[in-house]
Each structure stands twice: as C-alpha cells, then as structure tokens.
Picture (cartoon, rainbow, N blue to C red):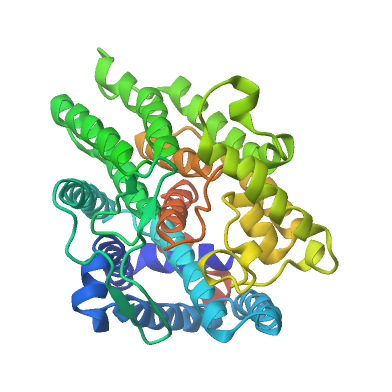
Length: 427
C-alpha cells in the first residue's frame, strides 16, 4: 500500500512524474552503456544512484505526510532486513544489494504511476535495445576496446565487463553492457517493446529477427527461446489479425498462464532436477543445464536447510557477485536467490502473492498484454538464471512490468487519488 500511495503521487503531480520517468530512463541508459562509462568516465557511474536516493527521500517525505504509519512500517521492515544482513555480510555487499532493491522499487513505481509519459519510456527502451544490438555486433566483429580493463569504483574494484566463455570456448558477448545476461535482457525487452510500439509490421519483424540473432551471439539461448515464445503469443496475433485494435483475450490468457507457470517452475524445477544430468537422460548436449542441475543447485539447496538460514536466509549481499561464501556465488534461479537472501518462508510468500496477483490481473488493454509478455519472459528466464542479481537489469525491467500491471486505475485521479488522511486534514 505504501508503494501504491507513492505511485498516486507520481500519477497526480507532473513534476514528480517527469523526475521519476527521466531518472528511470537515465538508469536504463547507464545499464545499457555500462562498460564505456566504467572504462572512460567512471565518476558518472554513481550519478543515477545519487539521484535515486534523492527521489526516495522525496517519496519518503510524501509518505510520512500522508500515510505515516504505512511508510514507517515499510521503512522499519526494510531496516530490519538491512540490520540482519549487516550481521552476516560486509557493508559494501549489503549496500550493493540494497541498491538493486531500490532499482526494482523505482521501476515498479514508474510503471504504476507514469501513464501519460509511458510512450516516452517505451521509445527509450526500444532505442536502448537497438544500441545493445549494435554493441553486440561490434563486440562480435571487432571486440570492444575495453575488454580486460578494470573499473576502480568508490566501493570496490571490478572488471569493466565480465569476460565469460561458454563450455565450447566461445566468448559470451556483452557489447556495451557489463555481462551477456544484462545485455540480453535489454535486447529482449527492447524487442517486446518494439512489438507493442512500432506500427510497421516489417520493422517489428525485422527487430525481432535481429534481437533473436543477437541473443544467440551472446549464447543466451534460453532468453532467445523465451523471446520467440513471447513474440509468437503476443505479437503474432497482432501481425496476422485482420481486425486491428481488437483485444486478444486468448493470447493474454496464455501470457498470464506462462507467467504463473514460470513462478512455479522457479520453485519446483531445481527440486525435480536435483543432481540429474539432463544430457545423459535425454541424450543431447546441455552443458549449462547440467552445470545447474548437477553442480550449482545441489550446492546451494542444502545450505537452505541450516538454521536460522531456512527462516531468515543469509541476508542481503550474501548471494551472487557480492557473496563472501564461494558456494553462494552462483545459484542460477530466481527463487533460490530470494530464499538465500531472505529465507524460504518470505520467498514462498512472495512467489505465492506474485502468482495470485498475475492470475487475477484484468485483461484490459494492449499495455497489459505487453507488461504480461515482459513479466513472463523474465520470470521464465529466472528458472535457470539469477534475474534479480547481477547488474540488476532484469530486476529493473521486471519491476517496471509489474508496475504497469498494478498501476492505479483511471478513476484514482483528482479527489479520489488523494489519501484519506490528506482529505481529512484539508477539511
């Protein structure tokens, strides 16, 4: 409810809406061209984070003014999570993970509160997807000049962009991004956004073909496969429909089902495939899947059985690139990432609430179909990838899609949009 109150502020006030929208766009630009920024103008790297702190401070003041109890409860819960995390992890690691939560919350707020400016955000996402595609082709043909360079940030020193290789010795291209995982998310979401925005069928299909080919160059085969599925379910009916402007209830129902199935898959597939080599079972080469099912998941799942980690997790900053325990460096699953950070009960409650919310999402307009397509894509990708960790790109786009689905209804404007406490004070 605190987030919804904040989103109403974004929807009502032009200045607040524009600030949030452009901050979100700046954040997306930073993630799209992250490698050049870290290599050549590193002082710009933390500018979006500084602006995000100012934005949340303003929203906190708004929340205290109109809904002090809910806002204080929200901040207190977050404070407890941070305090527990600090007992188990270094301050820098907790700060980095808390920053990523901030990305998701900001994206969700923008999706919920920014309506009249949504076309500008969509155009930015499409353009950034094109830039990411260009970056991958440049990396593929010539190799980017910052390969192997080191980024010396204010908090820690890291490589400018991760140099990953697949099991076949093929480099996993990242283009202008930090990693192939981040770049693939920018391209995939840009593709679905182009499908919703472009009026020309030829341009839409051309964008999809380029996006899928680029994703294959990054070796993100799962992401490429889910993009094909989403384009087939969401975009194909629009392309081949003889009646324009018609609401396609059946594709939207399929997208909703895929999103819910993805959440269930995130929870169940690591358990079902525990210590199983799929390549041996089905007779095909699947080295990356075998690594997850036979090595990664059997390593991290037993770590959830100890006390109090089963109930509370290892705290923010304990999993992924910030992990101090080498066994938690990889988990390659969205549910396991949440459970390892916050405990199994919170993870199960979060996924259950998300599944119920997605299933009950009204089938209203094409914007909802687009948001469902993006959410379903990222959730399904979360079965075999840590979409909430890494550079926070996947989580940012997922938060934006969820925000679009949960945005305040049109009638929440004017007097109806003003919180009850504010109306009482005015009287």
